[in-house]
Amino acid sequence: MLLYALRRLAIGAILVLLVTFITYFLLSFSFDNIITSRLGQSASPELVAELKADLGLDRSVFVQYLDWLGNVVQGDLGTSFFTGEPVVDAVPARLAVTLSVIVPALIISVIVAVVLGVTAASRGGVVDTLTQGLMLAGYLIPGLLVAIGLVVLFAVNLGWLPAGGYTAPGDDLGAWSRSIVIPVITIAIGGSANIASQVRGTMVDELRKDYVRTLRTRGVPTRSLVIKHALRNAAGPALTVFGLEFVAMFGSALIIEQVFALPGFGLYSFNAALQGDFPVMMGVTLFAVGLTVTVNLITDLANGWLNPKARIY
Image (cartoon, rainbow, N blue to C red; front, top):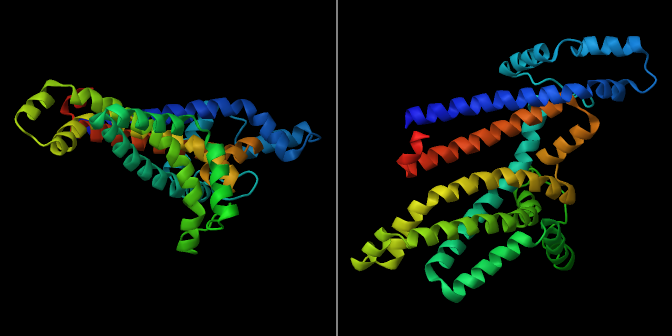
């Protein structure tokens, strides 16, 4: 298991290096635009060349990347071109806002998905049909429409929750919890549908296998058979979808953060891309790919623990 974990960790480190280098290389084509956005269209060539030299953008891309990577190892991700804020402080602060929405949404999604998927697979018939209908509705209904509906119901009509804004949990825990309720529900609906569909499919396959029939003939109770045996064996594929869904929720978070005015990771990344804020874009890329690799590593380790055969890959 240790060798398996080290191998996965090495693959993840290589992936981080590849993604950050490719991102750096692609962003290097926009260096002239970044300089222009800082100095203005009327800047003289001499002034442009001077700023490029000050920022270290007059060297080869590979040398620049190695210099950036060396600074990263020392905990320095640079400062924003436009706000002067250290990236190493700014990105985690925005990421914390996004995770405060995504993590509760993912927990709710997993609980609801397991209940729906297991129920649909084990009961079958009308229950299975109705459950699949719920999954399809959750998958097809746009998240923006769900968000608007929830705002109208809980914020406008009932007045129970705020329609937007964000309060840090350290400032007011109650206000924070109220500010994330609607975003969390909005994201969790789509996530539940995606994960539940996978749980149902794998559970149906497991319940048709010979070992399940053997356990039934030996008088093993249905609840024990489903939860202790079939669900454990079906957890591997479901965990893969769980990891993918966690990453996909970051895409949903960008829309949610714009709708509810949340100062999160997605909105921060979007604004940095519009402004051509190079240090911020590289910092965002590093944290995003690092988080993705971490989630995939945890998923792989969990799969390896549940299914020793997976460790050979």
